[in-house]
Length: 61
Image (cartoon, rainbow, N blue to C red; front, side, top):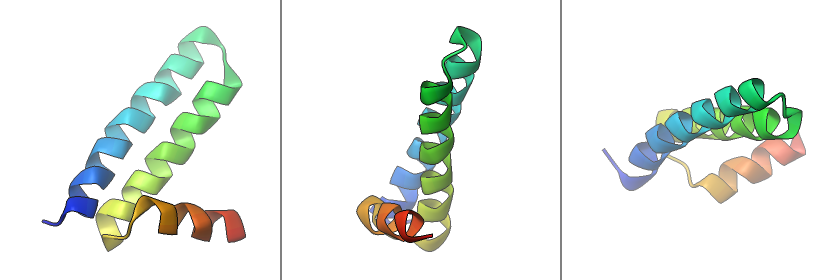
């Protein structure tokens, strides 16, 4: 496993936590940020790309 794959797994966990915290506190911006982190983490784990590269790709969608 490379560094980006491991970092991707961590981002998924962090994103899930943010998402749940946003639901509990009824804070949509935190929830949305968590969803974004989770998505980036999943892509990062699957493809082994750097976070900045993935974020730029998502921005261009």
